[in-house]
Length: 323
Image (cartoon, rainbow, N blue to C red; front, side, top):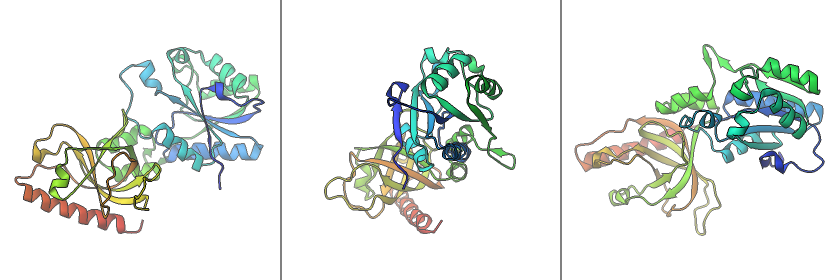
């Protein structure tokens, strides 16, 4: 069993007597298959060198600081990112606050102050398109030259591709925005997860016989296109007293404004199959496995209910089929 990853925010939390390490740097939003290959390279190198592996990421997304208002939708929360890289064998998950001051730090100072003075890097693993420093002036080749000067090696890993497709967070965001959660899962190596807290809704689902768990999602969360999806409903926090024991359940999930009732607020509502308990207040994740249909306006409530029953049957069929 892997040891739990140690999490830092800022380099002030470095333990006393910190020695050398292998560092991999990036936003790593999604921890998709390309990221997994990059992190795997760093973990193996650290193991071969007998050193800890540090993954450094940034918060907020650098684009939001450099170009306010341009923050891309977020595929993974920071806690989720830490969980995923822990499974890959990373020892330390370091979140570096991306401030205007950091954005203006020249490339040579970024290397000297952070990689050399703070982290004591023995090796640095980055993607071949990695850029750093003020106005992203630093390149992988420049990093190699700094490594020669300061005594660390640099490994520029190629981007992961299949045919003409290169896996990237931008590509996955476009898949999710289009509702193509199958393509997103293929690039992620797992279904896209949407985290949140179950909050009270307007109660209409319960009146119709389909009580739903309404998900309050984080700001910038990558919510799939409007439609109905088959999802795995994962309870992330401690189970409340008297809760049913299963942490992973089946759910038919509606994303949209509920046009049959002239809704205006876009919501994520999960009808959890085979569960009677009140899920209010629980921290959960929705793993989007398949898209069932578009969001539609039905002429009558009865027609909507017939479709909802078909949604549930289809969800059960999809999620009961072995992967």
